[in-house]
Length: 101
Image (tube, rainbow, N blue to C red; front, side):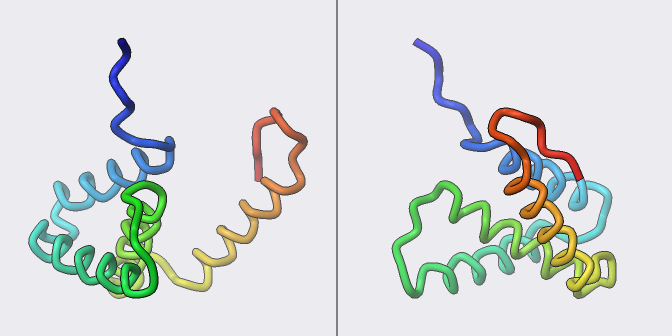
């Protein structure tokens, strides 16, 4: 029997790994990360029960984006534009073909 994957989607693993890397390179402390992420999870759980899957990593990504915006690493407008570009590329890509910008 094969074990269940640790991450439900590739992007879950990627955002997790990026966060760990940024912590290990001194960009932020893990206690600060944990406090910020806990606050984001709490805010997301106010209106609905969280399922621990995609919603968990959406909150994770939101926390990381906020942290990087606050320290000047990632401009929120630029991040939103890139998200929009990926969404358009995804919607315009035929089923089964790789999505490219």
